[in-house]
Length: 573
Image (cartoon, rainbow, N blue to C red; front, side, top):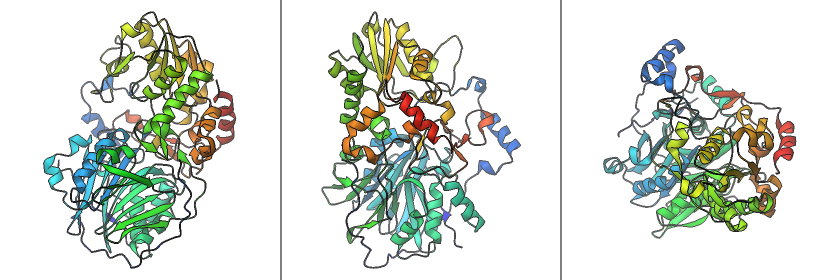
């Protein structure tokens, strides 16, 4: 069996319609040259024996490491990543760079770009923000008319440089690069099967499995190798591939994660996770990549292939609640309009006498505007977010209460003092941050604090590319609404009723995935373990030494019925 050898670059610095169009195949076989990037060698920390690994991690910590805590890390689900692909523009890599800036909210741990020049795939990747990874010199190393890019927040694979995408693989028919948004629920079994057959893996990312499956496929042409590989995948994947002469976009049959197509005025074709990336590089939105569709762009134009028979689409509702930017159109709907409507529903179904409406910035702002407009109460900025603070791990003194939250959010006493305040947030996950925000507002003089949450209670973990805690850590999975209110310390608490959410979506409601609210999964997790919240950062091993084995928790395959009953109990107010 021929295994793909990953040549990972070193750091140098309305909803989706069903596919009704006929299946099209490329008229001639794809021609791949044998050129590929030189192999790079990297140090693999996971090859160390565990005692040495623990010692190495301990030695790498600072003298104040005993103050380390992830308690103040953002208590929110995290999107895995964002992808972009551009074909037919001589500024492809620079446009990719700009598009990744627009998608930076989807991942801040690493970024990378692969371009094609003279039939050679060239790449630059790095750990950090887009602006930290790339500069003029780096972009000069990426000439060519085609490119793909990626920003990541890791859910599968620790946050090490070797796991930063796009990945590039050289195999017997040429080279291929890939950027992946999503998570494969059968990654472990696929990797074990490949390793049993002799495949060698350089990363701990589920995306590498896709490259191996392409390399060993017997199908021709290249497009059908992608189809053959994807037919073996289960879970969420919106991917862009690049070869010496083609750009390929593919979306899983359920359409869990978004992927859109646009065009620039010069005719170049652009794929991106969100339309906000198209807007920044002045590309016109064309349409979504349909669930189960493969789109191939080359010198012959754009060709479409139905990947496989696909069921009812199950697009991630959390894109509209939290992940996507408000100026994006996701799954055929305006994110801004969705969030504003969520706030209006809360004002109608969970009203309360108040003097001012504020938001937990930034994701709660639009819902708060909707609440305030519907309630006829002024919206004001009662909390100011600092945009210059990353995740905080250090509390210098226990006397400084809520240190991490105070770094990120500053209350405005002039807005809050003596007022009955409604504070709108997008979600509650573990409840730790919410309790600190309530305490912060009351210490700033708020007479009453009423929390309104622009989503139903989260009672189930996500297996489709979103980093969420295990079910046992989710506060709504353990407590009733009244118990959560008492834990948080607010005067009243209301969630967006689940029935009202589906009613708002109307005929499109069946096209969305609500597994995090119901525990009913369109694709059941196949693995014994799933990723836990707070994937490790920097060197991939930060956190307690007890967590070095990966931050994985046992998947509970038997909680669906229980969670389904529970969402009926807590979905309303």
